[in-house]
Image (cartoon, rainbow, N blue to C red; front, side):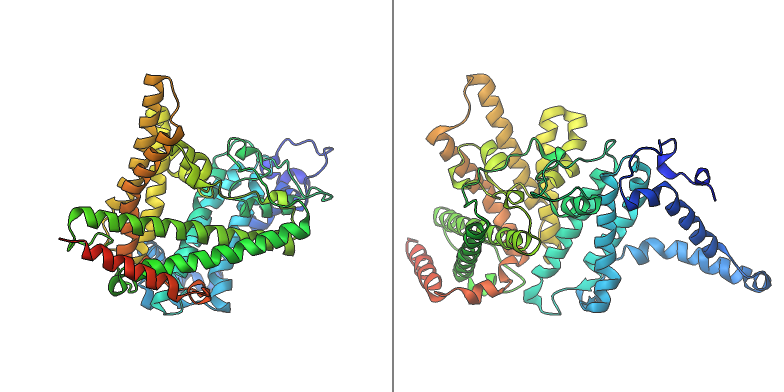
Length: 470
């Protein structure tokens, strides 16, 4: 067979140019021929069986098509889901991960846009199956956060590949480990796990915090290991402190509000604000710990360059404006997902204002998915409203700058930032509390060496607040 019979997306290519790798050759022809062979095999039918099976086959096929949306897209209750084991891993998790990796492989190769567009529905379907058909908690209600974690990962798979699907130009990598040779497969692996785009051309506008960690690989590893342990202890302590405020509601999956209606308004909101701050610290600590663990795996196991793992936070407590907090100091791990989900669509309608509103709308949608997966009785508006008000605050800062000619900053900027974050962040935390997020347990709680200390002082603080009621 000549090469002109199946050229794929590289039709008209100069074959004297150097090849990009094995996959490029496959896409240039072999993949198309192989696909045709598979298609021909699936369409083949024994002529002797045609007359006897024509009508039943047609009826079964039509029934399959009619039931396809409800069967494939049905979200089964947790009690009906499959257990997580080796069989379900190979049947559900691995196909989703492989399709995602293939999409990453295609987006760094030129002339593959058509293949990316054809692949995306399959990636979305496989990610959906991996999210809702398996119970990763093993039937333990207190381990439901595992189902949530997998669902968030698959959610990112879908929207990252959606962005890659419509890119006109291939993505380029400009940072590789010292001494490594360019490899299309390793680049695809890095892209698929590199959510901030470190070393890639699409992340040029993203802020990376200054890195003050040791430059030596040995001392860098020791520093990150200690950081993971420290933030793990902090997360466990603050999680226990959160539960101590209301053991009757914060330790059960039905959840409960952080706004105690039995208290007068002033005491009620002081108490809810304290809970919000404690939960915010716990979220910061657990995300820093998880990033440290991922950094250790990348640097120690896969021998990556420490420069591929820049800091994830930039001292968010020092933010002097909402724009500074959300755009620079808080983690940017899901920034691109939020922009693709809401920022770019609304920007086409409302311009720069739509970009800000849409990005936070995307964030609100993702956080709402988190809440609904845990407890469907929680109102949908709590996450959407709270994150949209963060966007409104950033827009107000822009209006202030245009009117006064000064940027929001200084100590007044810090007061404004923390007040706005506390006001609307309390609604976000309340949504998590009523969804039962605080009831989840982990090894961090039992690993806390001073478990009784946060419980003792929080209980005393809560008792004192209640005694302040006239």
